[in-house]
Amino acid sequence: MDPLRRSSSPCSSRPSSPRTPPCEASDSVGIEAVLDQLKIKAMKMGFEFNIMVVGQSGLGKSTMVNTLFKSKVWKSSLPGLGTPMPQTLQLHSVTHVIEEKGVKLKLTVTDTPGFGDQINNDKCWDPILGYINEQYERYLQEEILITRQRHIPDTRVHCCVYFVPPTGHCLRPLDIEFLQRLCRTVNVVPVIARADSLTIEEREAFRSRIQEDLRNHCIDVYPQKCFDEDINDRILNSKIRERIPFAVVGADREHMVNGRCVLGRKTKWGIVEVENMAHCEFPLLRDLLIRSHLQDLKDITHNVHYENYRVVRLNESHLLPSGPGWVNLGPASTQQLTTPAPLKVRRRVQEDPKDEF
Image 1: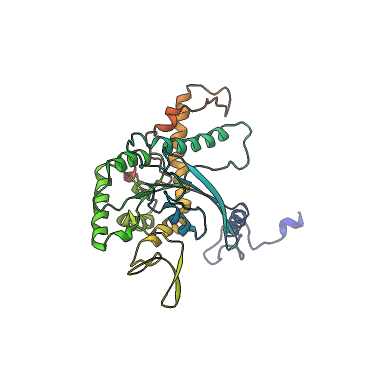
Image 2: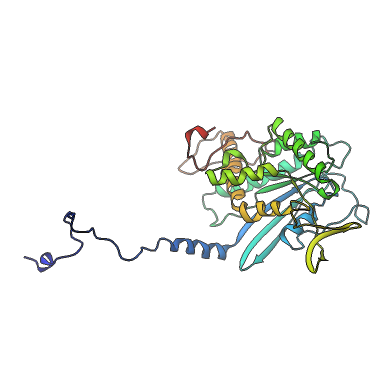
């Protein structure tokens, strides 16, 4: 008999008796090290985040972006001081690489000077919708190539911050018409611009009227209820939805207040502290866009908005693949870029069948 067969082993194939404890591994396999691997890889590649700011001139869009990322991302210019007011809507994009504690973020900010500034604002949203869908088209054209890049450059707009002028009344017809189209194409986060021009009571009343307008006109802004994946997301996002639109104030200058240096706007009656929740809700906007929901914004952009655009474009091609993975897709027309696709919700995680649309 083979001597190897006679050797006894503590982990034999015999069924263990009640008196004999089962064989257990003394050391861990090391699965938790996968998280370290992902972190190292992510640190090497860095992150991409593309944000668009939409609103009338003079609402502090450029200052707000600089305040969000604590850097001179965008140089603001005041109309009338050597800079003529744009006669048509022009989209400008700038890209910066911001590094913090070894983490690199490639940030692209797209501004929309001239939006809503004209007497006739008919279809003034077409260039914005066209730009957003054009980025989807670029990604799609790279994705359907037979030989694709290892890393497809992501220029898709992950979030659009919509600046509502502080009128104190309600949403304007222009706001409603545009938001109805915009929320079907991109993640929209509305904010009340220059909130320091309103009293606390006026601000809360204005917020309530805006929330009512959003409900009445079926404008689904971010974070959408249908994308809450579990009870923890539902609790967190419910608190955010109660405060949207955030009442924000932007400032990129520091002032001394009680011996400490703070970001704020200096007025005759005092200093409006940007990061003080008693003065404005800028910290809530910053936490939403950067600290808690940045990756979720990118996931919804890829899994929902881009996927909707992709499905519509492939269905419009009317061409059967000539082989496995082959798609012949022509360039998108101007009408296809400016017409929002019908929103088809695709849940990433389905836990409860009754939550399904």
